[in-house]
Length: 329
Image 1 (spheres, rainbow, N blue to C red):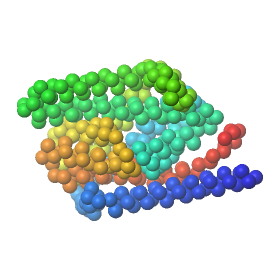
Image 2 (image 1 turned 90 degrees about the vertical axis):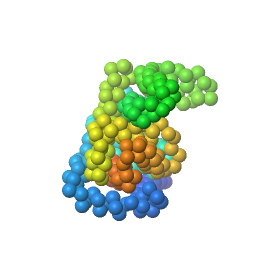
Image 3 (image 1 turned 180 degrees about the horizontal axis):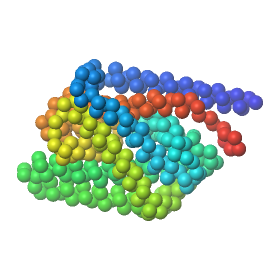
Image 4 (image 1 turned 60 degrees about the vertical axis):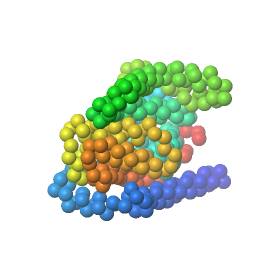
């Protein structure tokens, strides 16, 4: 009885902590963070006064589609551990999103999805979650390298042709490396198993070797689907805030921004914001765009796709249970 009471108390305390941290970080990001967010009032005013404001609604409509692709990825990956529906996968993604919001490098995403599983082997899901993240990185690198290549060829090749050719070669090599790693996850598991200090982690990532090439191809397609939804959202917001470019420039700027944001490590809770803004300002600055317009679009993208869904995910976090019928935890 005491064990059950302690478990319930700890669960309730954990939920309360998640709620408090989520709202605190939302408040800090929206109203208190320096420099990048000084334009918050301008962001809202421009969005509602702009005759193109229906684009904001269209961007919002794409939010559940964005995370729907992620849910399909998780349903595909998680089937090696247990079968669950798309709605259950969506719920797990939302829980992971909220817990990831309050942890560095979104590590809480792992805990959120693992907690939603019923299997006694739920910790084996860590490898599956990693595969989902890595496949999204592969999609970002593949498309983003094309975006960066556009900027390299347009702005730097006439001045530094040899350096640019080297950079193009590096981007191509990076594309090949990430694809090889994705389709040879068994080798990655083997490398970890061959390093004695890391052998204790093998049970948690062994599932990475269980996916067939067709399954990995489907996973990559879903990742690309989510990527292009995200890309479309950013372009719609750029148009809303007055950034006027050609289609190639939009795609190059956004894909290049995502690439730089993904390959640069983040260490703080909200550092993904700063890295995305810096990347966007640099690339779109080359295209002659105003800093405030780009910042407004980038901040709105984060608010719509991360902050708002994280707050919504609190509903699912509050419904979490550590113990389930027929399952020993």
